[in-house]
Length: 147
Image (cartoon, rainbow, N blue to C red; front, side):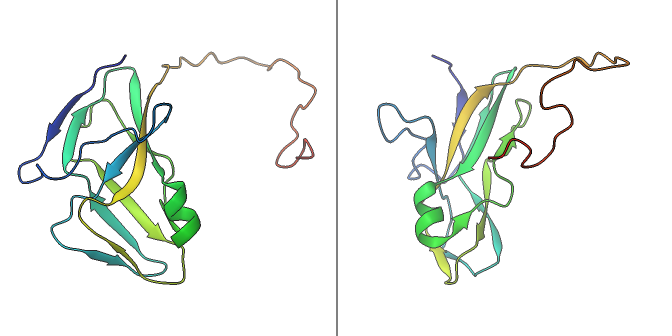
């Protein structure tokens, strides 16, 4: 099991730390650490603090993703999904939420607002070549495979 150092920020002791909601869940839920309820108007984006910072291990990233229930029931998603938290970032984890719905959406302290997955990220070294290996698809673009 991967161990990740996490620091709860001052005044956020009542906000849960990221947590899995079921035995086989891939993502940990992230919770809003707001001082007061915040309403996201249709079409608007709000940056929601989560009340903690962490040290993602080198060679890994934290991906922040929308919660499917908020997306399907209220149109609440993220404008940059998935969001990436790099291994060298030490600031507070924040989640940008966008309201794609037709009604204002209220976010309150302790609400589950997103989910986070910690994943390995390989480093890449480019190898410049004159030609790439041939494939059946070749240069076929969007929709080329018929799906």
